[in-house]
Length: 594
Image (tube, rainbow, N blue to C red; front, top):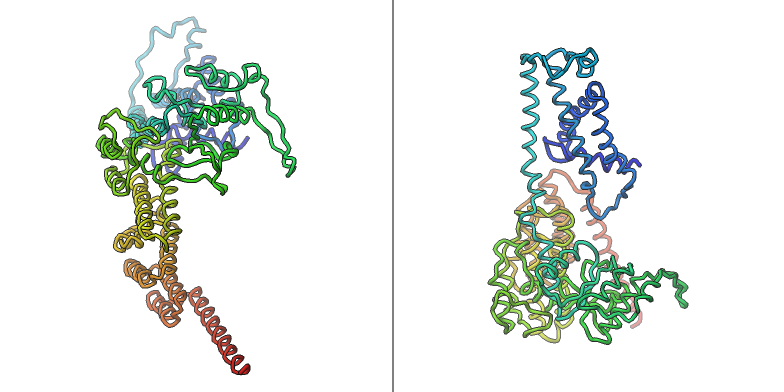
């Protein structure tokens, strides 16, 4: 139980820190010597002078704190922070702090005098004849210290208020709106759990938005009552099984006759298959899976899915791989035209949606929502214009773990679209120059939209600089690489730089790769990694003399040789000698044959 109680006491400590950053040594020490010491004093005095009244807050604290921790038995991989379970315990702990502060004032004044119980025992009334407490210098000092401790609580208010203020946080609402807005008319959407379901239910039940869509929550579909609720809803969801058959559904063990592999078929497996067979295959209702669903929960249909933004569309044909396919054009249309981004972006406005509706040939009405395949598809210049109408990433609202999880699906979808465009371009580079250029443009739009939403996204940075070069935007690539070290961790910067330079060398533009690296060395001449990368680059180009000069340049700059570079040079020299010997042997062998 060591972890469980450590889990709880960490939350308890975090409720009362007032100096330093949360979790820092200063925060821990000041909290222990401030609020926690006062709570200890309050408990001691409570047991000395307030028996049995003190038992009420003590028992309530223990029930809602230590005993609740034992009952809940949290694991080390909870899906979210669980501090709210202990809210009552924190309140009772605050009572102990108040009692401790009062006790210190009592000690500072002087002798305690008789307790209420002692006065009552002597036949007196503690409510009458009380002497005025003398406000001694020690009492004044103690009072000032306690007031200071109370005032110091204002120190973390700004950060804590920012973390707990939800007035500007509409990510969940907007995320649910975006899921629904991108679906076809009368679609069925499978969702995963609380975060991607409850906001959708709110939009449908309260704001009456996209009530044509049927939501099926995979966390509840194992429960027969929920399945019957879907079947008997208004409008109803077609399910072939009767209510009695639904009640009789059980989890079953299944052994694959070919592989012998054993799996457990859940109730939801039967129900989902029933829903898809009855509605998608027979009634032709479009079926989608939310991207928040783990792949193992939709494994049976995974290769038949097509990424379109915040949802996968169920397709008739499989992808031929172990992954869903991506419709990058649809992702961009949803992300840049259909979806709302006000919770994520500063300056995002209705103008972008009106522009999108105009491009799609739809009415320019603020209430118009493009559904699924409605309207005409957009061309790249139109998508690029929509991308430019995105605002800048917001930093004025706090994103907790749940909001971050939802938020992360936006850049993930754009990265999938960008990679798909890039893969297409690479496939047809030699055969269709116009289509190649179109796909490179699509990849750039996707990655640049991603960087607007999530600046310095690591997945985007792995490929984006290469695309800039392929689009003849060399200076943009240089500027991006120059700014990396100030915005991303060093290991990310080094990986991106290495990947970019390697890609340039493979693409036959080694001179540009060297130019980029020379600029990096000029900006930070004391960075060993840049010299090592330059030496490696010269080696890949077969230029041994320049490689040796790089090692000498580092020695001149730092005053010492780098062992790793010397080893690389030695290996490079040995490989060259072996190649020369092989070449000589080939010549000799050819002469002998003659």
